[in-house]
Image 1 (cartoon, protein in one colour):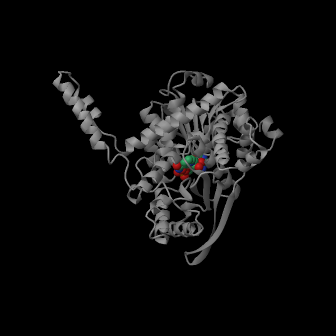
Image 2 (cartoon, rainbow, N blue to C red):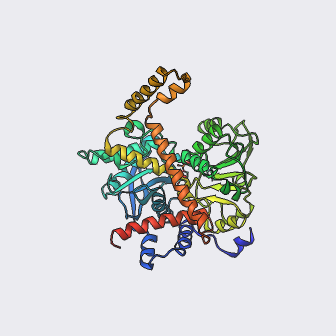
Image 3 (cartoon, rainbow, N blue to C red):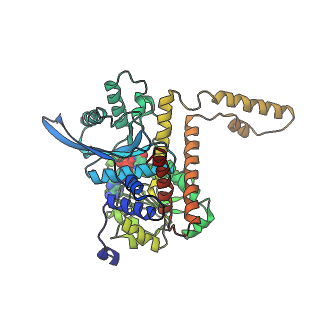
Length: 474
Ligand code: NAD
């Protein structure tokens, strides 16, 4: 244990979020009343419900927290994990408020969770449990297109969102906007192309934007671009898999280690992410994967020498007990809260740059916002303008051809193609990630009293929330 660990107790996840919030507001000029209003979680609903399964009634505990309603609906994922508790859900709801404000998604912050190990239940059992949980939330407007819109999180995905959407529809048969009650749905149940990959894609876009600023790259003791950078990923679930896949397949980065719940795979030459994902799907873990060396102590991967560390599994994994052994130059928090407030200080003193969670994993809520808009407008993005755009491009190509300008067939093909929904979603996400980074970095670079990107992110977000509350007369 480090000296820091011996000196100060490890704050809880919620306490960590509070500490970071307090650091930021100490640099702002907010009235104490408004500061408190923004900090506190408005409400948390706890529900215990029974479902008859395997011959007896099982009781489950679930939560839905609403942190801030300065904008409605409020937005935030639903997590299925054994470790879910009120403090965790409230911390995650607070992060959602700040995340939405930072990326200008017009939502307040919320989060939900169900104490359950989804691996212990068959699909039909999980469906009954999810529908019952959804029923409890829907009847209190804690799932509602204009009040509270959940999305996937740890342990949930498209399948659960489809069940929730269907449950809402059954209980609100005349609500034409019912698909907008939840995002992250499968395409055929009102979803949007690009939502499944969105959070990992957002991590990729965030890193690309970071590497567009040589000053910031130098701050992290690196040079050049993403190509050739050595990456370590913790958690090859939805977020970690997509981030690792895109960075290795599209940006030339090498993923040299992947830590999962049952250990880590290490390969200096770079891991084949698709093959590892298939192995996990077939065997339930990384053990036995032929494309690298297995190490039972998965957490040790967090301490490996590398350029970029991507914790993409859970909160609190970089803490007072291991922060001083972390050797990455840059950490991008793909998970929510992977670095505790205590560890954050240690990393900063070591000169490790951290791209904070409220920015780094905002790709999910950004594309959820697009899905919600698509549901409310009842039309897929690009449907009206795509062919018109192609026709205008054709006009120009014909004119150039007539004037004897020679354009390659490949150029013509690409130029002619109008944007479809996936391209528009990626373009909107890329723009959101770039703009938000630039806002954060401006505060980080221009204010002497702002020590890092996290405080800069909180400052931008809290300022936006404060302006909303002021506009409401508070
Ligand atoms: P997921 O359930 O799809 O994946 C989590 C992965 O982490 C799983 O593969 C699991 O086996 C692995 N894991 C669990 N315990 C581990 C351990 N001790 N060490 C290493 N790996 C471990 O979840 P997800 O949706 O990818 O979410 C991951 C994180 O990203 C969470 O913090 C979540 O809040 C955050 N997040 C997710 C989204 C989203 O759109 N899904 C959006 C924003 C933030």
